[in-house]
Length: 435
Image (cartoon, rainbow, N blue to C red; front, side, top):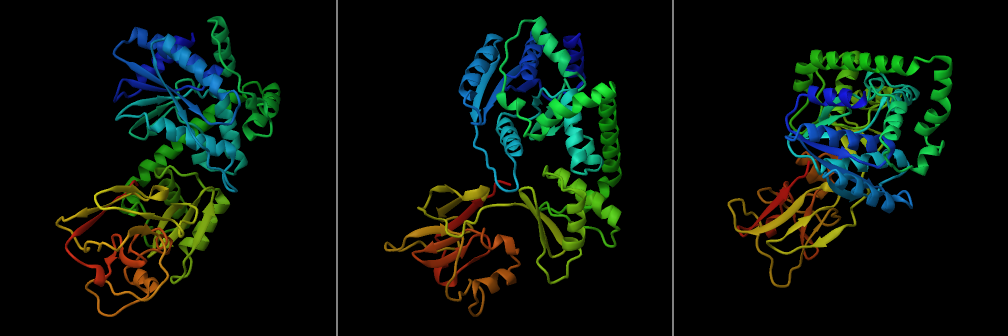
């Protein structure tokens, strides 16, 4: 009965595209998902599928699993890609969280407009996700756990097996003599999800046999409540979110409304939701900090700041004040940490910089500590800190703004000013942002 239910679920989705991207790890869940998709495409030839295996580099068997996944996908005539990723972990990011972020980023690169990403999460995964959110003290947003259907990058993310028990998936695999891989890390109860799977949920089911279905209903009800709240807050939220994706809370704004708007704003940015305690700190220490303060609060790999009354969410990046790159004209350079692509072009309607002399080396950097400078069109010289304040550059962007140097002299702060002695009509500076 698994395939008819799967096909019915897939056909019920509001399709914008008939291209399916399969997140394929080779485990029993995604192995069954691959089998189901292959059957579906055989019955609906107007659909096409592409399987993606993400190699996290965490297991010594990952290369072997990738080879097996490719063989299984191609045996159905389904195209296949192996994506290698590097995990960025740290004090605030667990291996599980880093792997998940890297995995979804890799999958997103295969999404075209309207495509549907299929993942194999099931009802047993749902109760684990619910309980992890409960452990964090999450509200309805976190307790809604995983939706069956949601927007993802240029398309959508579907979980067609979300109401199916894992036992049914395993039985399907056995009945159809499917091979799959076993990730040894799935038995490691040091990971919270595995601890719940192997020790907590079985005990709950022994005491309350219907607990998985009950939790699934609770998650669905929380999700419906969140959808209703988002609908009711829609107009207010649209007015509060600014063109630069910052949040300007209405005035006056009650604590309840403020919390709801901040949660919905963070959800729209697809960042990890803060706990209730962290949200209370955001409200008291950031939103209501003194007017002349420079408040911030960090959680997960993010920080939230306030500038000129607006709230901004930023990723926590390493310091790049010592980074520099020699550059040539008519060449495009990738700046670090997704800060964009920089090009210096001869001529152009917006040319403000003179051409470098033969003995001048041009470079881009992110830190200047030197004499006062005089921007083009300004009277008198100022220290760069004062100029950043006058040009209303937020404090966190002052060491993330690309600076053009001719030898060791500052020539321009990209997008902000050109130093008067380096001004001219020869060179246009272009910065293509990636956010």
